Length: 191
Image 1 (cartoon, one colour):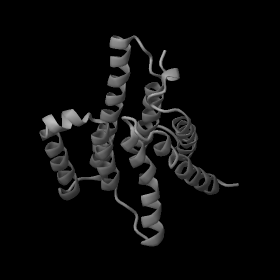
Image 2 (cartoon, helix red, strand yellow):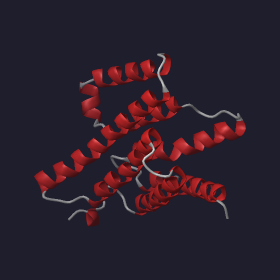
Image 3 (cartoon, rainbow, N blue to C red):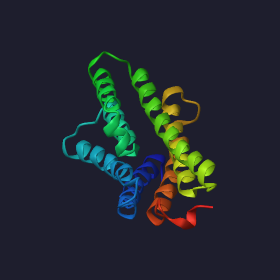
Image 4 (tube, helix red, strand yellow):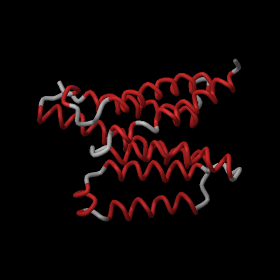
């Protein structure tokens, strides 16, 4: 089996595994986050297969922004609408102003770091105020770090791209299985 076949197997396995977490997380605070994750790769696959179109990096930026919105508390969104306005304005600028791919990857990386900060905040607040270590959020932090490392590798190329893709994809499949088994509100995952 060559690298291309291994990559295809990992890609399709990842899509299959990541379709499961939204079902498990239904009704939790992170449901829409997992729903967006589940739909992202199948949309890329469908557009490339059916329409022979490769979605641009702006697609990933838009999805990442929606992931941030999905993690925000509804009360915060209702009270601070400028967050949405600023975000949509920013996405509009990235879409229509002439920017290089490097600049777009920097924007994408910044949004992913914001998602990581949201997970770290949730984890830290729970620990500080409730004296609980939330394993679920710890796993989300590690999962997010794999995403960030992939984009960072695309940006600066610190590792062999193919090997790094394979390793992080395998890790992400295991994360997907974890999120398919355990819910965000599972009391057994809080120590």
